[in-house]
Amino acid sequence: MAPALDTLQRRFAVHAAAEAPACARLVDGVSFEDAALHFLEDSHPDAEGETVQLFVEDCESGERQCFCVDLETGDAAPCD
Image (cartoon, rainbow, N blue to C red; front, side):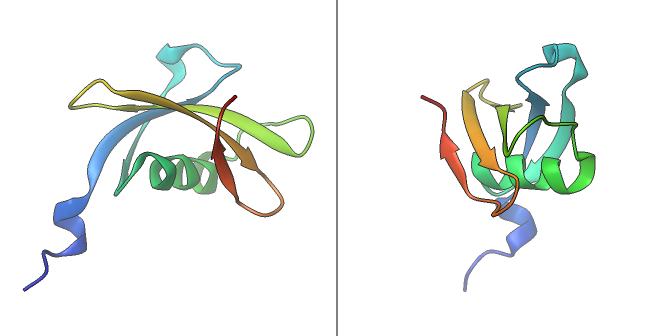
């Protein structure tokens, strides 16, 4: 029997690269990328251009990842 989706979710702190970490919002997601996309759905940060850079931190482990998200397609890729 597969675990329910909500048991796989973790809590992440997400903020735009242009914002201070203190501006991060808590987001639940199944992965770093999922949390980044949920943040964009809920927050719609002001972005100049076609992409936004987000920092995503796992609240439990402290692991941090960066994503560049294409605002037109929703595609997310690790930052360079």
